[in-house]
View 1 (cartoon, rainbow, N blue to C red):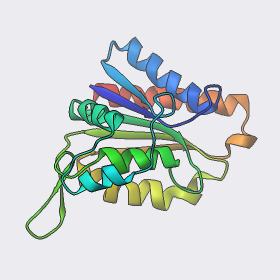
View 2 (tube, helix red, strand yellow; view 1 turned 90 degrees about the vertical axis):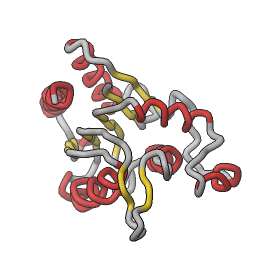
View 3 (cartoon, rainbow, N blue to C red; view 1 turned 60 degrees about the vertical axis):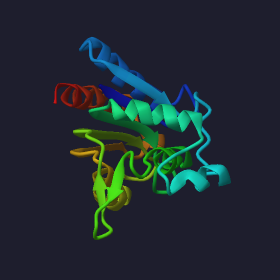
View 4 (cartoon, rainbow, N blue to C red; view 1 turned 120 degrees about the vertical axis):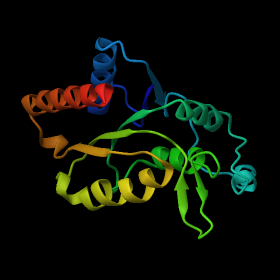
Length: 191
């Protein structure tokens, strides 16, 4: 199953158009998918004291986090859609990672103290947008995130596609990016 993790609060944004392109492409392929819409779900990204008390046990008392864990347990391909804010993912997406990618669910410690991945997500695709040029963020999105977050939990084959300069873009450039989104979604779907 393919899981879409969507992290944008405004339903008329270009991120919403990206999300809809992903969904339309998956529907066109009759692909099974689940949408995790973090804002629409009312997901609280902050880790609170009761959750932190359970963290070392690999547990949570957050019902949405538990539901998301069940979804990720059935996921073999994942697609993220969100804007780049302050050079990284929005807090709600970071909170998704903090609260859902728990010990014993998505990773365990090796005897040497290293993280060993437990998820079996074969393809990880990110579609992001930014006002600044894409190269401003490649150290984080193309290097750090795939190697130190995704690989650590078992999200493999990460591919990042950013639409930089969004506020100065033309309708033609946006249409071209949506075509890229459809093509990359097809690749993810057929992988």
